Every structure is written in C-alpha cells, then in structure tokens.
Length: 335
Image 1 (tube, rainbow, N blue to C red):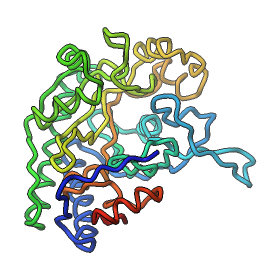
Image 2: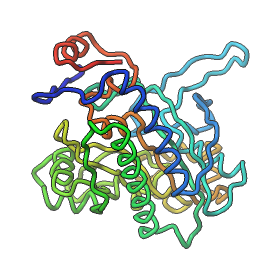
Image 3: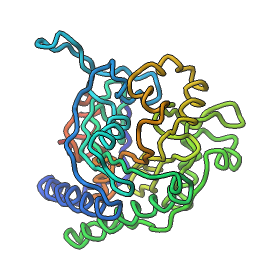
C-alpha cells in the first residue's frame, strides 16, 4: 500500500507551469555541470536488454523486471532496472580512454517499488560511468568524485534560485563521509533509515559509504547487487530535505567490482551461477576496463531543488486512488 506524507502548511512555491519550465532548466543545467566536472560524453542507452546477457541490474536481488516477448526475434527482453552493467560494457566497446566517461538518460519501470512521496514505479536518472585505472581505484578518488558531484548540484541550485527567486532551498557543499558501520555504531538501536535521517539532519550533506555487506550486527544497511559496485568503495549521496524533514538519497554510486571483489561478492551473495553469463565472464577474466559510476535521480533532484513534497509533482506516473485523493485535498498537484 502506498503512503502519503503531507507536510504541515505545505504550499508549492511554483505553479505547475513554472514547475515545468524549472524542471527543464534543472535537467539542462545539471547535465552540463556534471559532464564538465567528470569529463563525460553523452551517449544513447537501451530501454531494454536481453536477459541472457546478464546486463540488467538486479538491484537488491528480489525485484521482478518487466519482461516481454519480441515477435520478430522470438526472444524475450527486459526493461532495465538501471544501466550499471551496460555502461561498463559500452565503455569497453566504444573505446573510452582512462579519465573519460559517458552520461545518458536512464528510464526504467520498477513494478515492485513501494510508492510514497519519494518512490514511484517510474525511475528517471542520469546514469554515468567513467574509466579509471589502478592508481585511482581507491577511496580518495571516490571522495574527490563525490565532492565534484555535490558542487555540480549546488551550482545548479544557485542557477535555479536566480531564475526563480521564490525558491529558497539551502544546500551544504561540505560533505560528511561516514561508513554504514560507523553509523550503526553511533545509533545501534535505530533502523538504517532512522540512522540516515539522524546523520543527514545533523550534517545536511552526507556520503554514506560501504553499502551491501553484512555489518557487525549481522544485518545489512541496505541491499546492493554483488556484481557492479565494490561494497568497500561505494555509497549514497544524501541531502537533508527540509520540506519532508528526512534524508533524501540523490545518488547511488561507487567504484565498480574488479576480478577479486566480484569473485568475493558473488560467493557472499550466493550468486555463483552468474559466473557463466557473458558480462561476468569478461569481468572475471579481466577483459573489461576498471570503472566507477552511478545514477543520479532526475526527479529526486528536481524535488529537492524545487522544494516539492511529492515525486508526482515533478514526474508523470501511476498512483493509487488514495494517493490521488490525498494529494488533491492537500493542494499537491500530481502531473
């Protein structure tokens, strides 16, 4: 069942017409900023892939992809969950050199997604991936990249505020880096989401690191597929959202698995059957470049910068009748 939170006294700062104009400005401005600071080139990307390639992102491993048959090929295809694996293959096939990368629009359908103010079954994000080498496959370079992305977001926010003075969002450029284990040690009696809220409320801009492996408590902070991020070199960029009064994840990203980390994580996740898939075989044999990358939520970023209370204010999706009625009563204009 979907959940709806209506912040007390909430009123949109922009009209629906102004919102549409602002969304376009955010997407153009941020993509320009991102591709500049990370040295990325825009490319085209698939909406669906063949299951047998192993290129689809399995997310936390339980989500069902939308799958359909193709009349002409007599085969099936799956709508992507994300492009985490496809991007790495593309960098190899397109011949990108070390220090350069790609950026693309990713549109997905996640039919098992829980729906609330922040979650929709429709996902839109900037997917990016960059070739690195052994010398930059480390935590320092990961943090340097996070800071560059945060500055690109803040620069975009400044530009949008100048165009729409009614907006008054205030973002912190200084990033607090903390691991999931450190966060559990600080707040052992809280849930992972409650820990994130406490951390983001205090520090405003956070990079929560090392997501996917089991913590000392025996639990995971959150699920991560074993075959794209290295669980020791990944994380989420999180901002404090004053409108909803909660932590807002803008990006999941990280340095990708190499042969050793993939081998280890496939075993930990009980996913050794994937070793025979084309993508995984190439990785284990060292045939793909070392990379880092991530996804940056387009609707999430628009929500944050436009101070919206519901993701349906910045994207078109399908909602249940209770959510539609609740938003209408609260003056939340779903697109």
